[in-house]
Image (cartoon, rainbow, N blue to C red; front, side):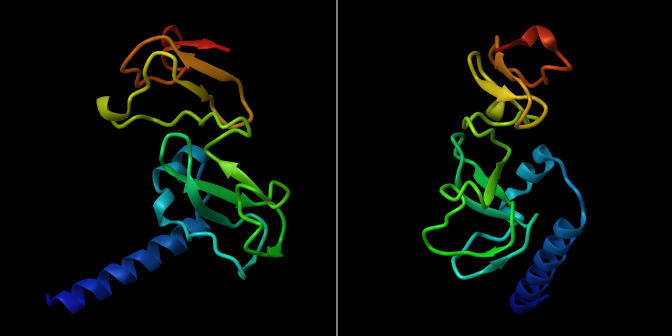
Length: 147
């Protein structure tokens, strides 16, 4: 397969994945795992309610996702992090604390003092009481304390 054919196939796969994301309900944790597959927010776009866009980074340095709360045409000064009546962060509470997501291993495990909402952004905050914590507050309550 030539390089041009490989690039064409990669573009087609990207389109297919984006279509699948738009038509498959995912929870916050699942969305954050594939955050870079979502379209980036841009000014001058007509957004419908419930559209998911990526914009900026969260406090963990990961891509931040937002859900559009009401239909509108975006403006340069209505960025998702500033226009709270138009966008709600996904994977983060309004307090900036991330929603718990399953770590892949030691490299992204929670450390003592790390705080998370569990299971969603509107649920209680838990603080890890141990280093290299890869368990949820539900699966291993001894590794977390409710704040």
